[in-house]
Length: 288
Image (cartoon, rainbow, N blue to C red; front, side, top):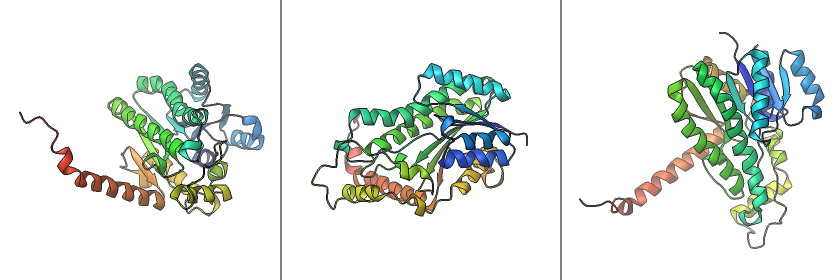
């Protein structure tokens, strides 16, 4: 199969970096991007030596600037077949500790960033009649646990946008894949951002208090079960429709046994809610 051209945001670490190197190994056309390539000169040189390209791209920049960068990226290989939105971070803390500015910054990176990059690639994908947009989401996008009000809000927004987008562009030959990651051994967990305000009193012993104790001691990303290289391989196979990804044509792609476990919890809770409120929801229609 002919190589595809991939543009990846957040290529300087974690899944973005792992996927970048994996794709180069598979002889794909790769355009890596990050906010500040000058901070990782060795990685940039390595990617370029393997035939890839690296461009500066800050997903929080104005849409016109992002569109201009995407246009430059498109000119390198003549098209962008696959966009992978990896750039992101997690703001963790008590709901009442997170300021409006901090919440908006979380949304700017995790939601509006993918929105702008996706809008930039869609016209050319639509004109060609094919393309794939891979959104890197999380179990936080299906379940909002304590301490994740801002982070889950950004991922729920990404999931809603991507589901609607899939319904719009699927008839045009464009595919959307929502990757819902569990915990993987990447630097992501060590770069969790905390609100400037301290945790208010009264939460000791609660789910929030216990979660913040874990976060403050250093999230155990290095002990997570998830292997980021294995995740990258599956994403590659799903996009290419090869190997384990052959015939996998669903919108959502949960990765990690812990991700599947949270899915089951959410499904059980939703079913319980639906069953437990039947007497209420079944009594609100007009009788005519």
